[in-house]
Length: 375
Image 1 (tube, rainbow, N blue to C red):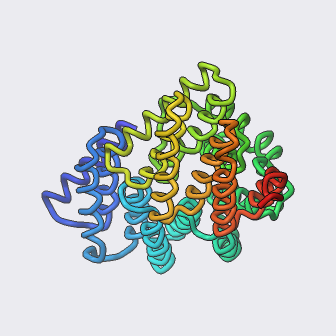
Image 2 (cartoon, helix red, strand yellow; image 1 turned 30 degrees about the horizontal axis):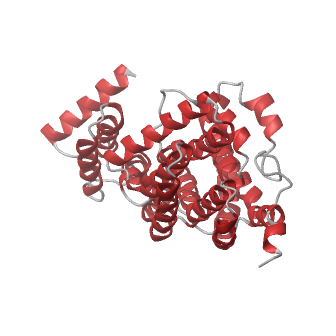
Image 3 (cartoon, one colour; image 1 turned 90 degrees about the vertical axis):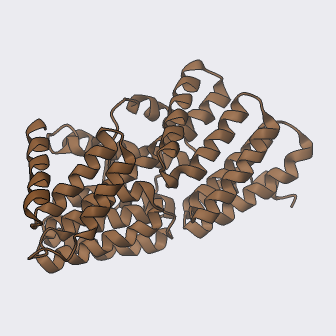
């Protein structure tokens, strides 16, 4: 790692001294990544990322352009710009890579495009169709590592779409969780997918409301190791939802401790200018207020979280905010707020339906059928 850092810094120095070459762009991108994530110098990291992008089209060939876009938007820009807007940049990186014959970089770009679409609130039906288009291409290019990454996410959205018999278990027509855990994950190749698998499990637990499992996974995954790839910026939120739900339900100290830890992590991220977590932090603020008994403040925060999520295009998080607020109202055992709870549950169902999470809609309709019958 130290040798790689040394070589990368030397390449940047040569670029500044002798001028731009093809390898200058990824080297400068890597410098931005290191400054932003390893050294905590966010503004400097952004500056070098912008510098790398400004050099696109200025080298003799274009074979490193796809790699440059992949590096900048995976590790820098997708953290500090709205994720829905950066998804299209991954598509641009895919096109540039395929045109230049850089199929590895192109393939990672299209995988990240799909993941960004999911996390940015794109219709799951559309993302499912996109996966169908690009799976055959990745397979023909023999990109097995990338196919495994996309298979995990694809199975997750098919669970949400209701195209699987499972909710949080990643088993269906795109992958088999049991085989993955038994055969692939323990191998050297599988180790690189361990964090991604855990992230997706936390993602599913948060939205399917399986918080006991989600909290267990969150605690097992808790560590000081932070993944710098863009989709992990949402990891504290996914884990925090389940941890706060279990802290409120059980009042156990270890759930509270871990919930506060991920809450603090999101607060730090917002201070660093990571704009995609604004509404998510607001929802965890609401969960924390509910936990400590500040009911009026919690109500205000739940409402603010859903508004912010809708304005930012995160329809799935607007749904989750509405759902959690309704559950908070129902848990109060105050009959005067039941009609409000029903309203917010119906709003949650509307937003989940807009997202395409048919399985979640069915779960909520069944769970609260006795309440809905009177409205």
